[in-house]
Amino acid sequence: MRTCTLCGKGTRIGRIRSHAQNRTPRTYMANIQKVTLVVGEEKISGKFCTKCLKKMKNEAKEIVKA
Image (cartoon, rainbow, N blue to C red; front, side, top):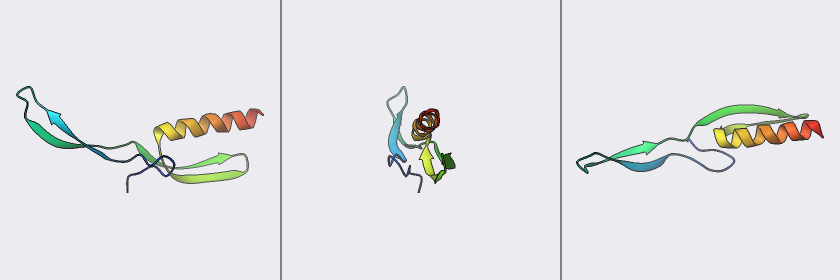
């Protein structure tokens, strides 16, 4: 499945509206990436959305500084 293991974000369903107001179904896919992060001595692996990856990388930098 295309879902983030941290926040649960996944594929959403929506519609495209043309100028003539015709509706056509489409899917909005989340940017999910399979990643292994090293935080200190701990390895975190999984499928994460880019928003969660950005948050985790910033938290890892703060842990290393402290």
